[in-house]
Image (cartoon, rainbow, N blue to C red; front, side):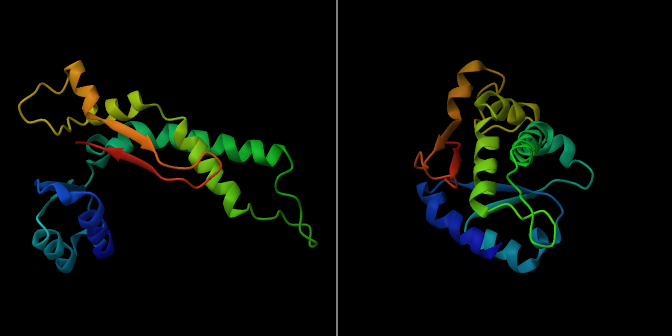
Length: 162
């Protein structure tokens, strides 16, 4: 978590604005040293109460299921295409890391921007304090970019919320 805070400081926070991180009750998020480092670096930390991540966390609300469904479909296609093969002992071979990265990237690519925006709306999460979050013009506040090369199966995808 401490390395992640450093990453956030180096790559995202630079505009001087206040930032809030919303986490569940995972113990690693709640260690005093982690909370102190967030505070020392100007981050506000909000914790989702136990039992409420299914209604307060955008990934849980609308994104994880279609992503996992897409990933499962990718694996099934790989298996059906004899992608696994057998070892000398007759066991299925492991998938190559490059195959798995490709599955993950394609699975994410199949999650539409509209689903992502709607997941934040459903959780009532907004970066605009003075605007009606259900207003269509706010959809422009969410920008999803794919910085990967076309031939790079493990490219990164960034979601920027200005």
